[in-house]
Image (tube, rainbow, N blue to C red; front, side):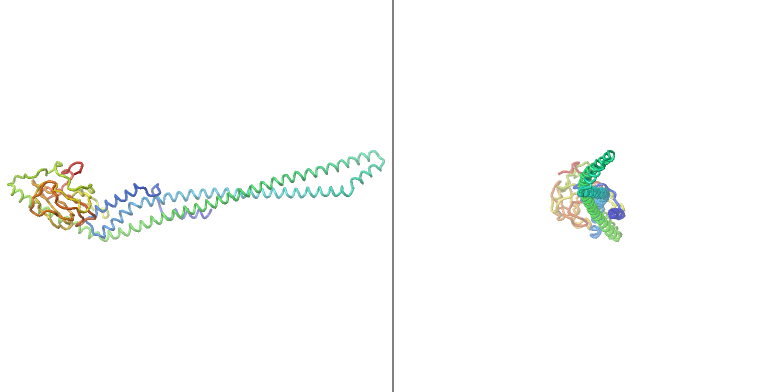
Length: 413
């Protein structure tokens, strides 16, 4: 039992636990994948090294609760196994004590049988020597009535003693047989109880091994997490520099779009018209057949804690999926643009323009007029992108705004 106590003590000192479940459900796996995807989206402007570190951070942070669940339940299983083993050992000890008592009782009964047997043997030996007959002859030869009465009483006493001796031997044998049976049963019970105790001890050690494996898994996750965090922390300055560069590129693009708006207004005679649905109110079509994977807005950096603006809405779609113009207008930019990768921007008039980033192919040219829903390019993963998707921006006088208000509420094509 000291072994079980040591196992539990070692486990309790080995690690901590905070959650109640053991094992990984499909919902947990789905949650891990969602968190990994969110991390990827938030680090699309980071270096490859930081992206990889971010993925490790996302995985370890998502998996640590599950691993800690395993440690928590393993702790409980070890404690339960210890209690079961302790109870089994107590039962085995009690059975062994009962066996010892039964064996002692049997030994006493056996000695009683031997004593009764010896007494009977002495009595019968005297009978065999004719002592009773000699006593009878002496009584009859005395000629005195009182002596005869005393002699007959003595003979009766001798006969009663012989009968009692026989009865005592018979009773002693019966008690000895009962004691032997009880001792045999106690031995069987003791052996069974000790076998149960041994099994319980083995089960407790198995539970300890499970708990130790769970603890090591947590330690491995923590180690991986710390290593990835070190990589990410070392790249903090580079990540900030890249973000600043992307923001500078966005501002250069904004200036270019403002100039294009002015030129377009001049071409239209300052009418501000020409757009079939731009300018808000949900008048645009969804630019790609995919699902919204990331929203517009300020984000807290998952590693550094800084806030950054994600200036568009991302749509997850496979490489090569067709990109459509959200509305009719004039192509004012078509080409490479730093972190945006292959980029197309379309002016829709009234100061409203749309941009389509990370394309694998661009199918339109600068200065070209396109119709609403026209095919303008293909989804890709160029520039600062962690996977194929369309980064879609809506800009008003060059400034980025939330595209959702310009798109159908269902975001369906």
